[in-house]
Length: 229
Image (tube, rainbow, N blue to C red):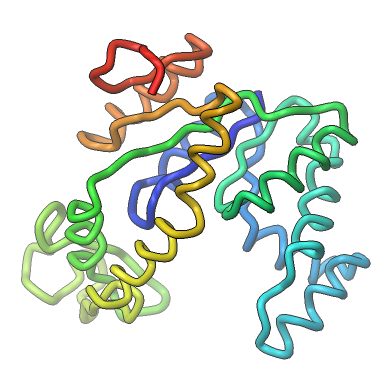
């Protein structure tokens, strides 16, 4: 089973990916992770990526696609994979189709975890992280507050709001997602691959929705009754 996970920042893609790789025994392929792995391994594409990264530049699509191709060709991805954070744009999706065609593979499902934008802002801006690098425990002022405000339950360290979790940055990240990534939903909808999931409720509730849809092979987990969107 070859999956793509879509959803705005804070939608819970990473959390759900971890549960799905355990159930289906397929690797989660994260762009950031494989970029770092390719650089560390010193592959041809890794060396090219390192040149851009060392210069503080974005790694261009053709290099990212090359690294994705190398990763998908590895043995553990033969029985399936979960792409998290890629593709981010329609041109990347088109390039991915070509890569998969060359590997005699295809995307089976595109799981779109849908969460209201204001709910995402609340989720992200309410996060607090322990300053103790050896701990790094995370809390949420609304959903999982620390027993003592500003103090980590686990190690007693100070809790802080990360720079990328302040409201201005969060709204900027959401705007970028809406502009570049949401068109992917239209792209994959035309291919009949999108499985919309309402990303509200508990982690297990959302996970069960996803597994139910993947088991059914089509339709959606929202209130439309399984109709087309």
